[in-house]
Image (cartoon, rainbow, N blue to C red):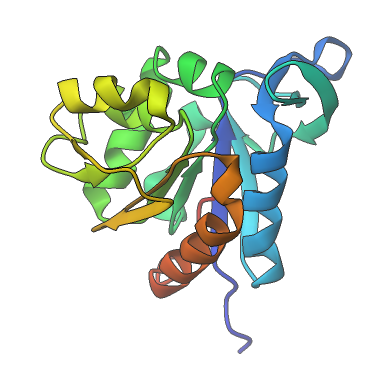
Length: 196
């Protein structure tokens, strides 16, 4: 029987039918953090709060391409995945943190002990899920006060691993972030699938 490839799911805040694709993803961090685990053998899925396609953005502004949504977060089961990647940028996390299904899903994944990676503004969704108190994290500088107010110990490092939470400051640190998530996700790939 061939070995099962870990399955990873990443999800984004907003997507629309192909004719109405909206900006949601910072292209550089999304593409790099997505393809690195795939090159390492992970199966990846894009989960979103809407179906269709996700319009990617470079620096939250310029259109840069699309990703097809594989599934809705409202229909996703934590038991089907091994890990979760929360995208950065300002648009995605801002939409995700006000969506009850997204917040609940993030909380369930964190509470399950499976790895959850967040870069840049991605920890906003962790804050909303109520899972940062007492944890050591890093983020983009503009949300560090939010993390502290939610009870996190915030450090200024490229990447921080605290238990099952993996955080990184910004797209400037993508190489080390991607290497870290591949290592952390691979060490947890015992479930039926992996989320990235």
